[in-house]
Length: 393
Image (cartoon, rainbow, N blue to C red; front, side):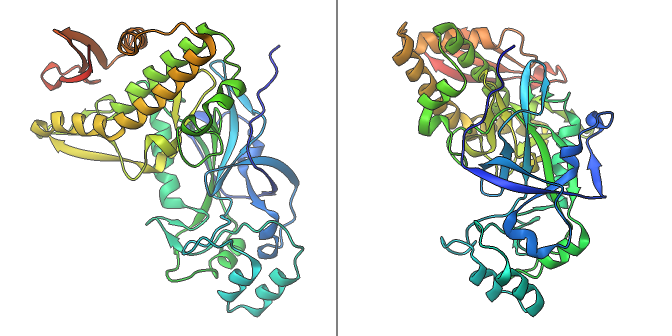
């Protein structure tokens, strides 16, 4: 039996607390998943609650307010998934590069009792949730119910991890902070107070490896160590990894048409990206598949039929460079390790053809020296099909 992959990254110990209020993804309601029904907080948050932790577990940091279990929790379709917690607090002042220490936190508080508890608490690595309004729908260092609800709606659209080929890291549960704890946290703010409910998202992710930002392990930063972590030790494995990367990457670039629906009034709706990006908001599975993580940044947009072609172009161009940059790093590492170098364009065309064999939305067509994506849609509306040149030979 293969040994479970242990994720690498900066370790962080989180205390687990039982809570009474959760919302469960409809796909996971039949399963007992106790760890996904707890809140997970750093030791520095102890002064804010009278609750006693039921356990302390080691995670690795992910993004600036998240953490991932170092070992997997379950397997789906042959892929191991890890517990990801969004909303564990941040280490850095939102308005400077200074670390958030006791002095900074206490300077924001009017509550002398809470100040005293923080001052007298044992010295630990500082990480705090705050009540500062941040990113429209979330508190700084934490997560808001509004954003988590958006994530849940998107996650429930999926067939566990796929929306017509667009792969997601599913949100399993929305876990509410107890109101006593939430009220204490909301006393910390610099300018604007967050007034919604505070929650954590407990999610399933295939790794903590991102494309370029928000992780210690990225394709753009340390591709060699990623090959080692994922045990890509043969050329065949590297080519399979690239093929899965291309397949899921093209699905990422064409999300709108994979979710297209007619409003029966001359307009069409589909999912688009809002303030989220391929290079920082997606993670890689060990087989090369891209899974989008930060689902709160997906939103339904409505466009007139005549604007669909423009929207397809816009969505592809929005992430095309990040996709191709990451592809190039993987291909360079494959070539350096295993040789078998091929002409760059011939190799990419071969992988596109293999990756899109069974795609339900995108096909390929040659026209002279140009290779084009034929971007269809899940409605099978031929008149809405769009051609996009992906390669010039």
